[in-house]
Length: 134
Image (cartoon, rainbow, N blue to C red; front, side, top):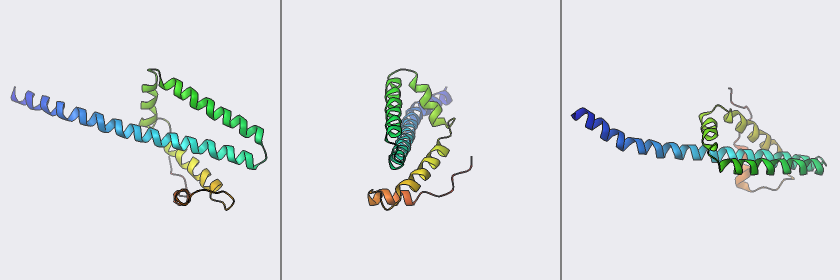
């Protein structure tokens, strides 16, 4: 009985802690991945404008807005919990996506004619040229 009480108290104390820490890690990863997705869209749109394709840039902008709106709508349903778990558990290669997106943004935005803040330039300069191996 004594062993059972010790185990029960341990579970009651540690379970909420792990639950809260897991939620923090999940939210942090999800937020970071969403910012990289935004960076992907911004890079694509700006590239198309520079290439003289405003109609294609408009279409990409509309696709990005539609994707965001669908994700917002989807997040209001119970289905979102499963997709969050899949994303955070790494079944989707988010590390590879982030590396490719960051490298593409680095090559695009670290040019003299593009005006970005010094903090942004510093962040982009720190992105390694080689993407991580799978």
